[in-house]
View 1 (cartoon, helix red, strand yellow):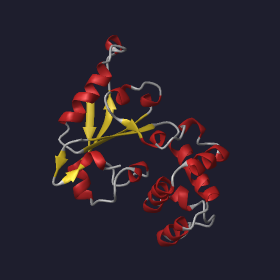
View 2 (cartoon, one colour):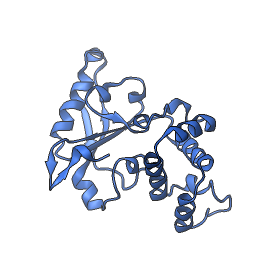
View 3 (cartoon, helix red, strand yellow):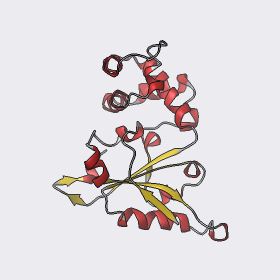
View 4 (tube, rainbow, N blue to C red):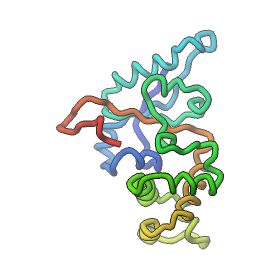
Amino acid sequence: MIVCGYPPSASFRRRLVLPKISMKELNEKLSVISRVVVHPKYRTIGLGSRLVHDTLSSAGTEYVEMSAVMAKYNPFAEKAGMRRILESLGFNTQLLGSEKYVLERLQSLSGQDVERIRQAFAKHSHPRFMKAFSYHPPFGAKKTYRERIEHLNPKKLAHLIKICGFLMHTKAYLFWKSTEKKDGINLSSAR
């Protein structure tokens, strides 16, 4: 069984792959796989991967995202064609708790990739990220937070990624994009 639904309005990791779009457009272009269940009797024969693969092509949307605990331990979604987002930038998500590791990875990325990460944080003002700049509730205004993100040094950016690692440590985030051309947009070139 596979359960799909509508996407939540905001997702930090989604900001790494999609530009900011309206909620209406998000509902039209993005599906979310929220659960994949395979009876224990039929596990280990590739059925989960097959369910995800068939769902991707029949979802009726240009993009499909999934955030799942099991995907950390069993690459069934990756076998179906999805890809892990932070891992695609070269991050080992098991090491995100180490600021030293994250800082080294940031320094090895291109300026464009670092800017993508910075913009993802700027567009997603999670209270825990905002707290990294101010310890006094309500942790400042979103506008101030966004301004500070623009001028972050690599060490502070590494700290935010470490926080993100703690927030997402139980789930892997996977993303799939259609390679078909719709509405004049070549989706295979979207990041």
